Length: 152
Image 1 (cartoon, one colour):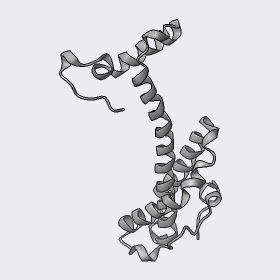
Image 2 (image 1 turned 30 degrees about the vertical axis):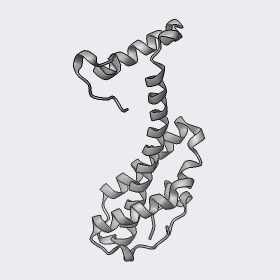
Image 3 (image 1 turned 180 degrees about the vertical axis):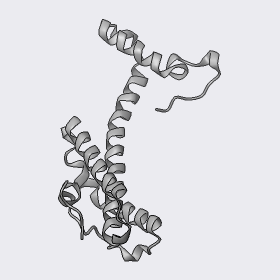
Image 4 (image 1 turned 90 degrees about the vertical axis):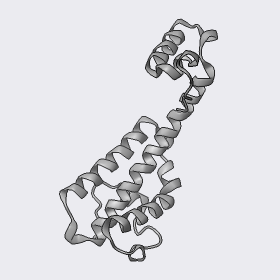
């Protein structure tokens, strides 16, 4: 959502009041007044929606993998908070895919990249050296998303 800052008198409705703009665009669509739509900003917002879903999955996968690494490498620090986070982020990923089945393969596409980020994050959060965590994921994507899986 790249709503540019301009002087209030020069701003479009999209820039001044996003919610009102959405309501107006919805009303125009419902009325079939397609020629009055703000197509440039509608296209941008629709593209942002798709990016947002992918970004959510990426973020949830990094957090999930971070907590799996922490669970495995700091057994004395295991807590219900970590367990709760693992459950929550698995659920979020599952729900994003249920809402948009075309994203089912996306976690597999980004899994190793997310693991590298999780490895870095786990090192920062635990104080352990990054070298303590494997270079490549010790978990498969199926294991990471499996509600019954916790590493030893």
